[in-house]
Image (tube, rainbow, N blue to C red; front, side):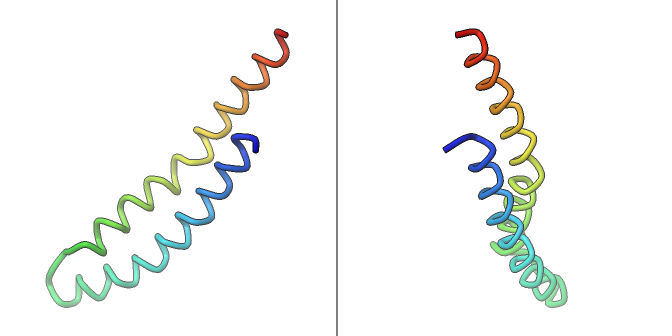
Length: 69
């Protein structure tokens, strides 16, 4: 598969994980504690944010390599 497909899959999956874990982090915040759910929310948010730009750069590199051949 091409890098953009992997980027889209990571984008969608991490977005869903971020939404689900943000509800858990909200409940933890109401209880006055920060635990594993908050960490999962931050990590999945970073993946959500960076997955498409990295995939686009990988796609451009792939395209340039194929063009030189």
